[in-house]
Structure formats: C-alpha cells, structure tokens
Amino acid sequence: MDNKLLQLSNLIFPDLTEQDTVESLEQLFPERCLKEGSKVTRMAPSPTGSMHIGNLYGALADERIAHTQSDDGVFLLRIEDTDEKREVEGAVEKIIKYLGAFGIEFDEGASQDGDIGSYGPYRQRQRAKYYHIVARKLLLEGRAYPCFCSEEELKQAHQAQEEAKENFGYYGKWAKHRDMDVDKAIAKIQNGESFVLRFKSMGDPSKKVDFKDQIKGKLSFPENDQDFVLLKSDGIPTYHFAHVVDDHFMRTTDVVRGEEWLSTLPWHVELWRACGFKMPRFCHTAQVMKLDEQTGTKRKMSKRKDPECTLGFYFEKGYPAKSVIEYLMTLLNSGFEQWRSANKDASYKDFPFKASNMGNSGAMFDLAKFNDVSKNIIAFMTADEVYSGVCEWAEENDKEFYRMLTADESYAKAFLSIGRGGKKPRKDFACWSEVKSFVSYYYDNLFTIEEAFPETVSLQDRKAILADYASIYDENDDNNAWFEKIKELCDKYGYTSDMKAYKENPDAFKGSITDVSNVIRVAVTGRTNSPDLCSLMKVLGKDKVIERINSAAAL
RNA sequence: GGCCCGUUGGUCAAGCGGUUAAGACAUCGCCCUCUCACGGCGAAAACAUGGGUUCGAUUCCCGUACGGGUCACCA
Image: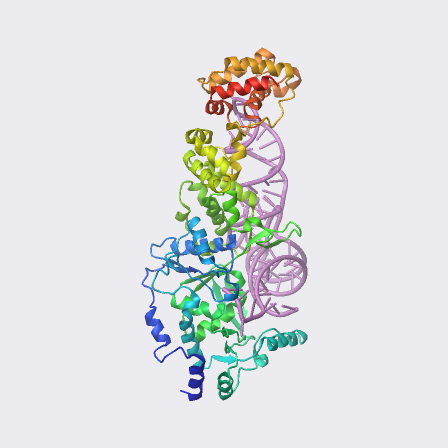
C-alpha cells in the first residue's frame, strides 16, 4: 500500500480505524433472506418542508411495489437529512403522520419512536461513518481525491465554460485537483484548508452506457466524466454517494424515484461499479403535472400555484384518504380503473400492481376526475361511515356544524341515509366540506328560501296548493301514496301529472306536476333541487314540514 | 447551450406491424312514474410533423417542432 496515500486517508478520516472496512459493513448488513421475487423499496424524503401530492404518489408506488404479491417485501423509510441548511423542524414527524393518515405504513426505518429494523440507522446524518468507510476505500483505490476549490473558483470555471461553450462541471481539464500530488494535498489539509472529496471518474463520454429502467425501458447515455462531490466539506455525503452506500447496505432491490434523477443516472452507474456493489433495479417515475392556466401548458405541480398540490389541501377540504389513494392509483397504474370496475368492493391492495405498467410521461392532475372518484368512494360508504367522516372533519374545521351534527346523531344519520345503499346510490359530495350546504335545510338555523318558486304557478295557486297540501300531508304515506296525493293536487288545480303529454304540448296545460312538486319542495327545502322529497319530509318530521309549508303559504 | 426523456380526443389512458384506434372523467343529446343526483342509451372528439424501412405503419428507424427534466459542497 502506498504510504503517502495511507497518510492522506488517515488525515481525511480520523474517525476510522483499521477495522472499519467495507467487508465489515457487508457482514453487519448481510443480504436479506427474502422469498424469491420479494422486493425491498424505500421512501427517502428530505425533511425540508411540507409534503405534496408528488411525495404521496411516489410513496404509494414504493409501497405497492414492496407489498404487492409478496408477504415479506420491505418498504422502509430513510430520512435524507444531509442538507442541514434546508432542514425544517418537525418535518420527519409530519411525513410519518401524513403517510399514516393515507394508510401508508412502513415495515422498517425511521419512526416517531426511533428506528425500527436492523439496517439502520435510517437517518443519514447518523450514518456518517459508513459513508466514510466506503469513501476511504475509493480514496485508497485511486477513485476519489480531495479537491480544494473554493466556491468562487468553481463559479469562475462555470463562467469560463459558458463562454467557451463547453459542458459545465468538474471534469477533464477543468478538474484542477484531480491529479494533485499527494504530498501537496497532505500539506494543504494539515494547513487546515477546507476541501471536499470528489469521485475520480474514468468514464469516456464518447462511449455509451446502456441501461434498463423498469418503467422507461431501455436507455442509453454517454458515460459519465464528472468528478462529482462524494463528501461535502463537513464530511456529510451528497445525495449521489449516500444513495449508493445506503441502497447497497439497506439491501434495496428496487430504487423508485422521480425521473429528475435520470440525468445523473450515469454518475450513479459509474459509482456503483467503482464501489464494487451490485446495482439494484431502478424505476424512474413520471412527475405529477398540472395544466398552467396562464400559459396553457403542462408543468410540474407547484406548491405555490396549486393548492391541491399540498397534502394539507385534502385535509382542509375533507377528502377521504381513500379517495386520494384511489385517484393516485388510477394515475399510477394503467389498468387500475378497469380492474376496479370489475372488482368494486376489493381493496386497492389486491390490484396486481406492476412497475412496468406505470405511465412514462407526466400525468396531469385532474381535479374534476378526482372529484368524481371521490364521489364514488363516498357514495358507497354507509351512513355511519359518512357521518363519522363528516364529524371528524367538522370537529377540526367547522365547530358550529359539528355541534349540530352531534346534537342529534340519529337525525343526522337519517338524512345522510337518503339515497344511500343499493346499486345506484346518489353521488352528492366529493368531500366533507361540501356536506353542510347540501343538508342545510335540515336545520332551522340554516334554513332559508334560497330559490324562487316556479314562475308557472301563480301566487294565488301557490298559496292554495300549499294550504291544501298542509291539510292532506300524512307522514305515514309510503312513496306511492305520497305521489298520489301530489297528483290529486295537480288535477285539482289544472296542472297535468302526465309528463309525456306535457312535453309534447306544454301550451295545453297551466303547468305540470314538476311545478306543483317544486312549490312544495321550495317551501320545505328552500331550493328547487333536492333528494327525494317524500323521504326527506319524513326525516324532517311532520311538525317541521307543516310549519314550513304554512309559513311559505303566508308569503 | 449540452445531455436525457416524452408527444394517441379537453384530461387520464389502452394499443406493442394489418383494429370500425378500447375504456374512464368532462361536454352535449335522449330515456328513466316530481326536481336534483344516480343509472341506461347515444353523439361529438385523437395517433405532433416530415422523411424512410415494409405489401402495409399509431406501432420500427432518422430528422424537425413542441413539452418536460437536468447540468450545486440541494435532494
């Protein structure tokens, strides 16, 4: 072994002993004993801010890949906290809490109560030693070297490259310290100069590397020639290095990450090889996009411009977690929707998820479609489920409504039951925040006449019809009897109950049964649209119905 | 600018050399013993573009345009 190099490595890695070898790490983190075909995936967020829909999208993909058709696959959470400057307090807890709220659970990794699993620690800053061990190996093998360039020098090089129309970066002739004399490097470090550890690339960009991605298929890039940074001046690794070391020693089988990493894939390929590690499979997922109203073009979802981008949006509006997952599944895997229509009651977890069925171009987030998906989810819930969903939301977001709902639970459940159950349930709301305005007429303090009575009915007729109806209404009538009474009213006042005849020749009649029932509907609910009037009136109770009809007759 | 990825109706998407080019959301019509919702039926609506290869290209190859990503001691 080159003594000088050894001296240099001792200077750079004073925290390591001779026992700290890559082989010792291989023993510490042995290959996992999993069944054939089982997969290990990881979500690796950096704790730098609030979660957005793209994070959830990625997490769901990871989770499904690990857990579909395998009972011992592993989905783990690793915290990429290598950038101290951008770290946000409490972000880790928030990530775990939010994902949990969407039903996404980890088998292993960082958690609120410390680490779970034997491949940790799972927070990168606590893994400094492991990175150093691998980095030292690279240094001693001549695949890494210290670089003393200042920020200013790098900036200047960048500018010079721009002027010379050459590629940006630290490579070839621009890599000033690549071939620096070891003695000189030792002297500089002893002198206390700041440095980073760079990878020494042997790549030749005139050659191509072929690569297979689980989603994108065959890819081909020029070989890497960048001497990118492995360890920053504080000894903490960059993403690139941490990715290779962690995914190797955590024994990740499938790296699922956004396609923004595609461009640095050649870096990673060369690094995996230089480390002597076997590469995992890669799945580079498309981004969730959004139509920009201003420009009319697709663009990445942005937290600032798109409220539906942050996960908080779904909680504030009160979308069931299940709806969000269901919609993301339709974006994530082609074929999910068709599978769903054939398997209405199945859990999304039963869907045969395949990485190869993931879309390879960015899917646009479509709020209208999402709302439809959510309406379907809510439509097939029981009244009890809807009730607890609304209450949970209202407790956080609308205290007054919460008190009203909980003041008479069975009353609330009764009106939430209308049109529910059976094969063709109503699809009235997409989220809990829409419920209140929909059911407001069930509560006297929210009830107002919001819409006009039908114009086809004269004031005189309206008063007479209402007064008449108040005297014949019987809350024990079934739907048929109820309807017969409306028909009788029609006949009495010259409105037809024969809709066909009315449509064919509307001028032959004063109006139709629609007008008559709408007179009653507006009197009772304050609006021209409502669920089935007969059921609705039963829930309201005879007293309230009569009271409202009488006061409307007095208008 | 270099490199990479992508482009099927308004949106999400099937399709893997020969199809009347599925389906879903949205839109519009019609039907369904009251309105709305649900449901049913139906309509309109697409292979970015130019060259090849081929008996035949939405499908394969090349160019162009457009969109996206990336080029940090951020991930």
